[in-house]
Length: 135
Image 1 (spheres, rainbow, N blue to C red):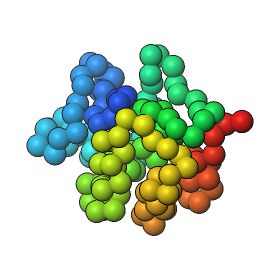
Image 2: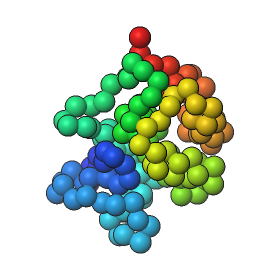
Image 3: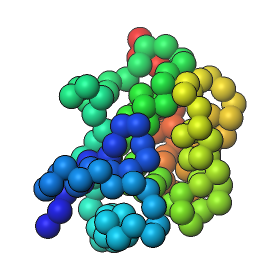
C-alpha cells in the first residue's frame, strides 16, 4: 500500500514509496489514486519544510506554507478532497494558494475557516487554535 506526504508548498503530494511528486491534477492517474486513498479513510503524512515539521507561529502574519502546516494531516486531506466538490472550500483554498502571506487577524481568513466549519472539516475550537499565535 502506498503512503503519501503533503507537499510544501501545496498543491500536490509525494508518494513515499518512490518519492514521486504528484501534482493536483484530476486527469493524473497518480492523483486519482491518491484521492481514492484519501476517500478510503487514509491520512497523508504532514508537510515538512527543510526537514522540520512546522510549529505554531508567534506572530499574526505567516507564510502560506506555515499556515497550511497549522492544519492536521487529517484536516489537510479533508480540505483537499472538499476543495474539488465544495464551492466555498474550493474558493477559499484557491485564495490561500495564491497569497504568499496569510494574516491570521484578517476577517477573510476567519471567513474561510468558517467555510471549513460549515463543511464539517474543522471545529470552532480548531479555528480558534489556528488563529491564535503562540505566545
